[in-house]
Length: 476
Image 1: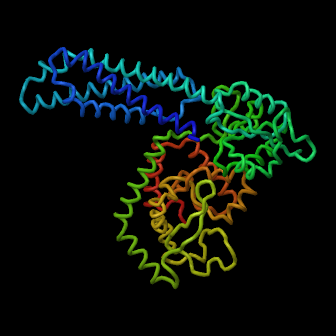
Image 2: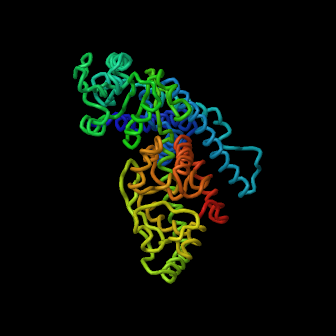
Image 3: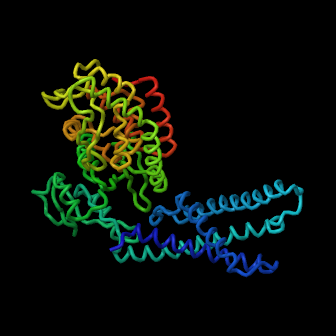
C-alpha cells in the first residue's frame, strides 16, 4: 500500500505541474498571441523552464511537506506568499536581463522596455498560478481525506494507559477518521490483572513489550495517557521510546509534567501535543545532506597533506596501527564503524572501556596534539560521505556507554533521534565528556540543537568549530 505522505506528495507535484503549464498556456493566449508572437511550439522550452522554476520555488518554501492534517487556510496563505515571491523573481529576471542588455548595447536605460507594457499581465499570470495551484490542491485533499475515512494511509496509534482519557482519545480517532489517526489498541502496566478488551480495543501488553508490539503492529505513534502524573513515570516511558522512530504524543493534562523540557507541537484536529517533534523542513534535510557531501569532500581534499603528516607522526610516535576503528551507535540505534587517528597507547583499554580524563596517561605525545587540534577526527569525514554521520550532530557514542548512560541520565537515549555529527552544538560549547555531569550538560546542548535544527544553525556551528580548532578550546 502506498503511504499517505508519498501519495500526497506525488499528487501535489503532478497537479502543480499541470497548473503551472495551464497558467503559462492561458497567459500566452491572452498576452503573446494578440501581440503577434511566434507559434507556441517555439515557446515550449520556456514553458518547461517556468514549470520547473515554480516547482523548485514551491519545494524550497515547504509546499511539498505533508499538509494533509494541517489547516488548508494556512496552506493557501503559504501558496499566496510563494507566488508573490515568484512574481518578484520574474520581474527582476525579465527587467534585469533587459536592463543589462541595454547597458551592453549602449541604449537608453530609461525607456522602450519590451516588458514594460505587460507589467500588469505578469501579476495576472501570478494570480492564475495562485488560483490554479490552490484549487487543484483542495481537490486533492478532499480525495485524500476521503481515502482516510476508508482506512487507507492512516497512522497507526498505540495508547499507553487504559484510562478514561485514553478511551476518549481512541473514540475521537474513530469518530474523525479523516484526520488520519487510528487507535490500534492499549498498553498498560496492569496487563496481567485487567481485561484484555478495553471498551472494544485490545490491551496488547505491558510497557516492557513496547518494542515488540510497535514492530509487530507497525505502529506510527504513541499517545501517553496513563493516570500517573509522576515525572519519573513519564521519564521512564519516554526513555523506552526515544530511540524508536515514531511520534510521541501526550494529552494536554500531562503536558504540564514535561513543560519546558521538550519542544511540542499541537496535533491538528486533536487535543494532543507532540514530544521530540522533528521540526527541520524536509527540503532543509536534503540541503543538509548535500552540504555534508560538499563540505566533507572539500575538507578531505584540503587536509590530505595534514592527514598524511598525522599518519606518519602517529606511526613514529608509538607502536600500533595508525587508525583506531570502533563501533558506534548511530541514528535510531543503527551500528556503524568510525575511524580516527590513534591517540592512545594500544593497551589503553586493557581494563575495559572508560572515559578519557584531563592529563590522561594513556594519551600519546602526538595524541595530545591531534586531540587539541581535533585532527584525530578527520578520518570520520569518510563516515560523513558514506552517510553514517553528518557534519553537524551529537557525538557518536559506543553502545557500552549508551547502555550505562541511559540508566543514569534521563532522556540520554533521545540523542539517537539525530544522525551523529563530526562536530555539534555540544562539542563547540563544552569539552570532552569526563563525568556524568558532563554528559548531562552536553545532553542539554544536544536537545537544544534537536529542537532548533536548521541550516543556519549548522553553518553557525561549523564556523564555531573553526574557532575551536584554532584555539584548542575544549580539547584534552
